[in-house]
Length: 495
Ligand code: NAP
Ligand code: MG
Image (cartoon, rainbow, N blue to C red):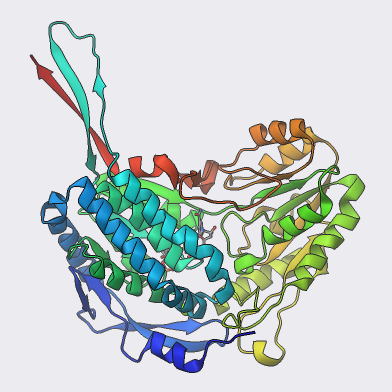
């Protein structure tokens, strides 16, 4: 098993205060204020980061507006494609830096970088393709006389991208790909818990020849920096990923100048196992639908519904898979489960675990914070599987965002579909069955943006992802996403 050397960590982090990126320059905030980012595996400070102010947001937005009508505005589609492909190449070349920074900042296992790498780069390459395929329509109309009509597609303008901490570099690239392909300019705010990789991505954007002011990065607390963006009259669209509560605050703030808003929010996704399923595959699938990234996954299949005949044995099997995962220092290549992102997240998750126990659910595995040996300083919670959960318990209804599965027993398709849909959320869902009819019926009836059958969490830059109900607005990935970065103009010409 390999362990990243302290020297490499020191080199990646450096001593300097981490800057913001405005108009192509890395700067400190005017007041010189900073905040700290921590390593959740040790609880120790990683780096000081410049805390942007509302005045910095103003400067970033002004730079982004200037860039729209500057050199970037004159980039032809093939120029934007070339810039995105250069950025993709640089991300590929320096991906180890990004995953190391994320691993230190978020606590995600360094080994999770492999599978994430291809997807992160694909978001750039897929939208690079789309940059050269943006077009309006010529439309026949029925107006009297001869009048010709067609549509033009134009970039929406300045986009404010606000991202959460649970997938820092991937999330930033997911926002940049479609925005740049459409010709927009961006002000990006990473979460204050995980700001480090975004700054490195900013460097790569400049190295890729993306002109100054096209990509700006501001750091700091959401209620100040994020709120200043959501309120800003110079921002035309907000693309937000995070909690439903913050999504609601952003929608309210965006009302001022009627910003376009797309939202990727939380979930409490059902994962349904029928008694005819391949139970080994399903047990592994059910565990891995939640436990990677310590359960800090928006579409995690946290409500596990198991058909009565197989329930006890199956839940036991899922717990066994959870118990077999190696918990430890995220920088060890053998580690499968790292810590939660912060002390606040730890107490939130432990609060839910306690509430489950006090309401009568039974922790078949996990259920206690890990504090022995090397794990003592970090925020480690083991994979936890609850049985005896009732639909009205807090752990059955609220998003925990930790490595916790709440399991339920069901009898019929009708019953399980109704219970699965009885939530304000609608992001992911899973179905495990070998019966084709059951697979199709349940997929059609689940109210969720993604349904995974005999798999979970499959994602691709070409396939839309997003939420029904309070899980969001709009879709990311696929053709749908770029449309949210484009305005449609109808042109009428009397001949
Ligand atoms: P969060 O508190 O909503 O934060 C997300 C981002 O919004 C952060 O950058 C945060 O800044 C910022 N923010 C906070 N308050 C704001 C405000 N009033 N105005 C503007 N921006 C504000 O969510 P989180 O705790 O970071 O992330 C966990 C949540 O995200 C979970 O609910 C999860 O389901 C959801 N999520 C959804 C998806 C998806 O694709 N659907 C993906 C990942 C996560 P600071 O943190 O720096 O204060
Ligand atoms: Mg951190």
